[in-house]
Image (cartoon, rainbow, N blue to C red; front, side, top):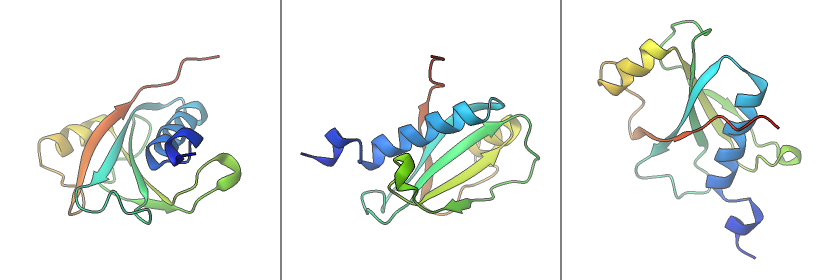
Length: 114
């Protein structure tokens, strides 16, 4: 059985992590995946999420690292970068660069309430 079908792939875990953050913190407005152009396929490269939160302080790019948590289905290390909406616009316009080799990738939508 492939890792993609078991939900253990990096993409599946990134989606699960984003969905859990949306559920835990209703002030998060948007979540994007950050990818490393040259290292993302490396299993040791952490999952990186950019979380847009109106209630956070404007502090720039401050990556916060977390270890895996296998009981929760999080099988990879992760890095969370939390920014305000204004900071997201600065990132998009190149005024506030992400660390070297990082780029904003796909957006994860808020899961529907069940």
